[in-house]
Image (tube, rainbow, N blue to C red; front, side):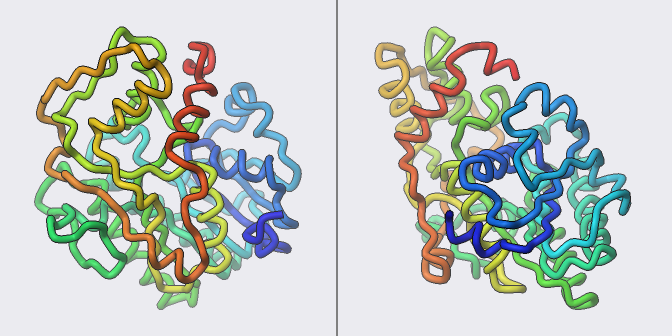
Length: 332
């Protein structure tokens, strides 16, 4: 049994965003490794729909589902808790909300989760923040460390996600001071895995989709932006370790330290999934092209907890493509 699961023995955990990408990464991890004696209470807007699409993840031992939304949380039937992981309001479907709604969802949703945590007696809360809180990565930094104090431009409406996440981090700190709640921040970067959507703004998912079903793999920008990708199994493993062992009042980067340009990524996907398919660089201006480099410095989680990527990008891509090989899977 993985050490991070054993650390959670006896814990009663509320996990928000249980049917999103982070939630499904957790569920697959728990299905493969067990809960280690912990009990997980999972918050979802529609558990029944999720159970129809992913029945293998809906009935894992020691997991219990609760219908609810972070914008309308109440105690309901949620029992006393020891830990909370707030992983709702991720960036997957942010485009479906107005910018003001997006800001409200992140800030007010976080406050409601904090209030619930206090009311149910939780001792620790892990907040899934974002590497976007650092703002644009300076050219002199190869990778962003946790003590870099840059931030997104608060006067740019396009930076709503990063600004809201930065503000939510501060809200967590205020609750820690007032209520003694142990707060740990996970600043999450970019990920890869079978549960990553193929039809939103994630380049890696778009490339897999194109490699499987389109005539060519499209790179909308110029392909020079640099990213890194952590497998979703490592994401779940790291989050569980930070939930139990992260130091209160500290932020930790969660991501891979393997840099790859978007152009190189598109060609890697082509070579692994559809070797004869052309890669087409459109060179269009895209929304985040000013964020040329987006790389986490992960020395802190490595030194404190021995955490490092354990699944190669190549393995992740092959398995991701295999998992969505049929349109029926993709349509889910």
